[in-house]
Length: 469
Image (cartoon, rainbow, N blue to C red):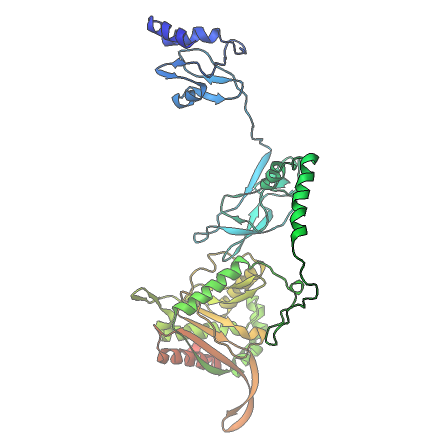
């Protein structure tokens, strides 16, 4: 065939006519008026692109589908076409649930848990899985109503935005078990072990057994080594449990360690008489709930006191950025909230513009979202100063760690009735220790003590806030 093509081309016949003539006489099966299969050693002259075998056709742009049984030539000058069938088609009945966008600073997360099972019916936007990130927990929702056909990811896997999690059938057909494609491939790819010839097995057993007879016998009366008196007695492993750290816990640990390694941490203390603030809350708690719909707590009083202290000492609201100091003309107070999954720090924006009722409403809303795991990244981003209330857990005294990139943190503690000297008399008073940890690279002891003293004055006499003194 090679010689025929060369002779015909040399004699002046057009390449298209030559190829058409040989295609009609090919021994490959013809499926109607269009289609043929040429041998691998044939030369094809398609336009200006001579090729020696079928594989070379792809580089010339003449092959649209290549199968073991056919090849399609799409040169318009040949007028010969091969029909092909689609290997697979996407059904409009199946939709995919994918990982949503998780935030500007989050590139991946861990598939924590599936909230549904294969075969369960789901509604539109109903959560089917939860993704745990360094900061928040994000739901993967169903894009359509239907039945979960299968899961294509496993719990504990690291996933990125756009990763396919599940396949959902809108008609509710074909639900399968929770098996990822990798599991099916691994099970199919592992063939059974080949049978061993019995004739070969016997000599092998004899060869392995012969060295065992030549080994010298060890004395059976050798006592076990004795433990030294100072060797620690470790508990048995069956009494221990090992579970992986959550991404949120690992993130908190890394940030706190970075804070210790970066900042020059120093803590100063003071104590506050809570008598007047507690009396204010007791006198007006019912009227406050009736008008504003939330309870009057102690946290709003400390937030207002912190705002007053930051306005008097703006350096505590500032931050170091390289060789510069950034002073903020706004006050965003971060409130540390302990949740079952870890510590989160939602932010009260523009706290200097809020009254007691606004602060209490915002704290209740953010705390509820944090405990439910529905708080967003934007609600925790930023913050210029943090308040941590360890007193709700019974902490008497602590040295809190700065929440980077802030420069200071206020620690509140439990209220304990202690004997105090008031007006020359010893009387019982509800007292609270407060602590301020600050970055000594930026804040001197003078500013830190003045700030803490302002907290003490405002909490002990809330009327100062009204008079601005």
